[in-house]
Each structure stands twice: as structure tokens, then as C-alpha cells.
Length: 457
Image 1 (cartoon, one colour):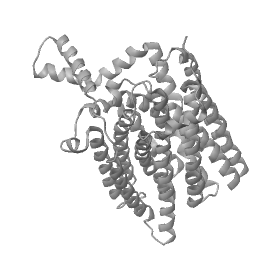
Image 2: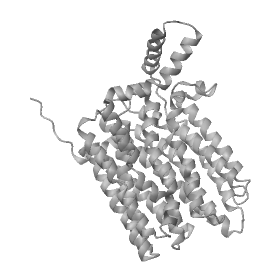
Image 3: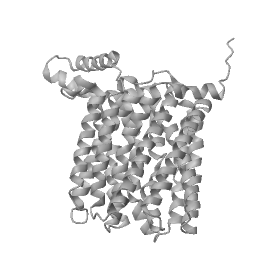
Image 4: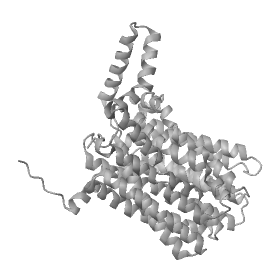
């Protein structure tokens, strides 16, 4: 009989000192930063140019592209960028290409006015979202491939570091964006947001430089398995010519990852997984989409928002993401999902209290701290959960599929968040109560499938 000794807290924490975790941290920051641009920065830019809450909420539909990036993820898994792939690698080549496109979009934004060119502003925002969503496909694949397939504890720690990195890119990027905008505004520049976008472009260049220090594994078995799938399909077609090879390649590229996912989990469990992933973070998305608008309406300045929501929020998120990672390692990712879901629902109620009490820096700080704590726990558990579900033959595609389905719930439904606040006649307290209730259906799905999940651990 084998006897297993339970790890001490210090032994569990030591997994964060793996050198691979620093690389995963940077990848997370690269992934999180674009959300600052098309999230809080764009929302405040439109708000300060006089556009309504409903308009700002519907403008958030550009985030919906994150819900559909799995459609082109198979192409990203197999197509090589000419010249760049040979120089820096398959994954890094795609990331650099997408970041270059984002920089060009920021330059375009710096030249236009949203009041007179709203359609153009949203169109450019859509291009940024597409580039960012495409970048995320390769960032997530590169992050997962830094860890061995059956290193369960390292995968959960890596998920925590990825979340820390994401929030670092998002929160600190927000601090820079908001403070820069306020600085240029006080200096008398009418186009202060346009100048701020150029500053953000410089930060993206810095991210590209950092990316070059991340090694890209070159797995040979992935390409071989993909070729085997193509060959099986081609054999079924019964011929060997250009058309049959093209059909086999396209079918294997697009259908192979989906078939693999359903075959591994079984149809009913796979549907349950997709239902849970779709619903889990809807409430958080409704709150997040309208949060900066809420802060602005109850009297907080851009610098207040930068200090409490971004600066203080970043510190809180980093601490509790690392703690959340340890909790997931020691208690299991499924238990972590349940705990974080309950925390998300509970902390949303603090914003109701803030709405009913009026402007209070103390309540603002408390609400932000506990909300970020819950979001940190939820995100690290969620990332670890879907990372441990993927087949390494189709890393980018399956992760993109699961991630984008989660994003579909957050973006398509949360686009109506502004309209919901208007329908409630600006009753922010009731709005935040509704967001708390939204987490319950996802936990029901998780409870049904929890004993039948097949995780790579």
C-alpha cells in the first residue's frame, strides 16, 4: 500500500517559483492589455463626448468577437506567417502580427472624433477586438504549451500566473490610460484621449520586446497527429488528388478539434461543460461593463477610478489570484469553481450598498477589494478548468472554443447592461442584485457534471 504525504503550504507555494511562471505572467499581461483599450478607455472616451449609457453598452458588442474566435482558431493552429514564423516561431509570429495591427488602429483613433465619427470609432474598435481575440488564441496556446500535459499542479499555478498577468496588463494599463487622459485634459488638450491612445501604443511595443524572451516549444507530435487525421479523412474520400487533400486538410483543421472534445467527454457531459462555461461569468460581465459608468455617475473622477478600481484593484487581484491558485491546487479545481461562484454573487451586493449610500471612498475601496478578490478566485479556477480539458493535439482550437463560449455569454448578453440600467430608471442597486443572481444557473450545470469530468491532472 502506498502512503501519500499531504504537501505543506510552503511546498505548495513553491510551484510559483518555477521559471516558466514568469513567462506565463508576461503572456497574461499581453492578453489583458487590449481590454483596457476597448473596455474602460473607450467607454469613458464615449461618455465624456456625451454619448448615452445605452449607446456605450451596445458599443460593447465589439467584444462579441471574442466569443467567435474559435471559428478561425483552427487556421491559427496550422497556418504559418510568412518569414515571421521562421524568425520567431509559429505562436510568437501570430502575436507580433496582431499587436502591430492594434498599434495601427490606435494611430487611427488618435486622428478622429467620436461625436462626429462614431461609426468609424466603433469599426476601428472592432478591428482591435478581432486582432486581440486572434492574439488570445496563440497566447493561450503558448501559455498551455509551457507546461507538460500531466503537470496538474503546475497547470493550476500557471493558470493563476496567467490571471495575474492578465489583470496586471488590464489594471496597470488602466492606471496609465486614465491618469494620462486626466493629465492631458488638465493640461488643456481637447484631444486628450487621442493622445492617450498613442501612449498605449508605445506600451504594446514594449510587450512585443518582452515576448521575444519567451521560448516557444516546437512539439513534433502535434503536427504528426494532425497529418494522421488528414490522412484518415483522405482515405475515407477514396482518392488522392489536390481536391481530396484540400478537403481532408480543411475538414481535419475545422472538425477534428470538435470531434476530439466530444469523443473525450461524451455528448451529454460535453454539452454540460459548454452550458457551464457559457453562463459562469455573465453576472461579472454585466457589472464590469457598466462599472466605470456607475463610478462616474456617483461622483468619482478618473483619477479616483484609477486609484481604487485599477491601482488598488490590481494589488488585490494579484494577491488573491495567487491565493486562489493555491486553493485550487490543494482543494481541487471543481471545489474552487463552486467557492468562487458564490463569492462573485455575494460581492456584487456590495455595489448595491455603494449605490444606495452615495459617494463613499471607504465603501468604494471595500467593494473593489472584495469584488476583485472574487473575480481573482473565479478567473484562476476557470482558466485552470478549461486548460485541463484541452487535447494537446488541438491546444489553440479547443482552448479558444471553450474560452470563446464563455466570452459569448459575457459579451453578447452583457451588451444589454446599459439598456437594463436605463430600464430600471438608473436604479443601480437593483441592477447589481440582478447581476448577483445570474451566477446560480452555471453552478447548477457544474453540480450535474462534476463527478463525470475528465481533466488532465
